[in-house]
Image 1 (cartoon, rainbow, N blue to C red):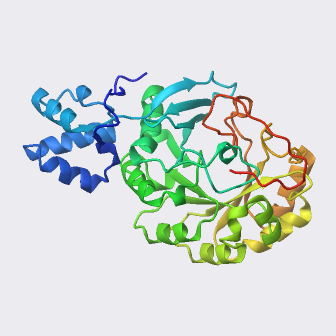
Image 2 (cartoon, rainbow, N blue to C red):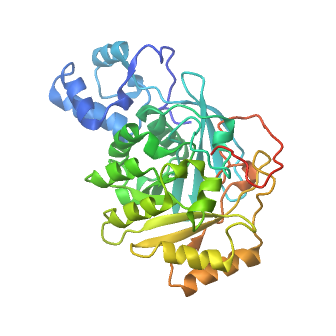
Amino acid sequence: MSSLWRRPVTIELLRNLHDLAPDQLRATLGAIVSPPFRVKQIEEWMHGRGAGSFDVMSNIPKDVRADLAARFTLAFPHVVERTEPAPDGTQKYLFSLADGNRIESVYMPMGERTSICLSSQAGCAVGCTFCVTGFFGAGRNLMPSEMLGQFFVVRNEKQIPTESMNVVFMGMGEPLLNFENLVTTLDVLYMNIAPKRITVSTSGIIPGLQELAKLERRPNLAVSINAPDRKRREEIMPITTKYPLDELMAELRRFPLEKGRDITIEYVLLAGYNDSPADARALAKLIRGFQSKVNAIPFNEDVNLPSWMKRPSEAAIDRFVDTLVDAGVRVTVRRSKGRDIAAACGQLRGKTEAKSRATGGRIVAGRR
């Protein structure tokens, strides 16, 4: 593990400087640190190197470090467990937070590039019936230090070159329900990675989309649709009754896109439910009017999810994709990495123990 990360004993007693937006950090440090260039040095240690302790700041005088350590902390979440790497190299990290909550992140090597999947909440209350996370209970928003900690701990441990990295907020939680902390986290990540290399995935929280559209710098946007009509989408994504499909699509058509950018339409394929050629044609019609691409995600089965939910056959997946292509839609199929270590899409739970339930009916009101 990188020597940049250490866990202080007094984590709960001190304000974490990693929770501050860059301009807030400069103002806070500027009031107590001199000369001014020291502030820049500290910021580089934090935002560039991902320091989790003042002790590692070798070019900062000891008395300055001691003063900072008496006032603040730089603590990141503590790694409880790392799975053995899957055959494809994917590895899941289980982190413990100061209040006892646990979250998971995923390291995914992909040839010349590497992706890190981050969680934005400890749990999720969105209610998607095809996702494990919320089944274990809704949780709180993560602070910027807890999101950045996932990134820096994995990056530093794996020694990943910044220029080869992608970051996706597709882990536990709904990022747009933690908007303020997400923006602070993004502002720091942008110091390491271009916005076009960062993706925020949402179930379609319209107020959050509206706020995201106002930002001067925006990450890539991925929106979970999962059914081409309102009725079925609300069956498997109960929160969407609050944010209806027609209103969401109108919002996506207004969303500002930089040149060369698309909105990714995420679509979980459930056998016999939303995976027919007719569904593909309806989806193609639904997403007309804005730059988009479809990411088809064959369902990842889990003992905690409704028993009727099954992964489609390869033939059914191919028919769905071919129909989209014939309709002029650009589409990729997410061959989820880490399925054999429960690190694939929809499988993050933030717990080490298994938990199961009986799911007799076709539609079961679960949680994401």
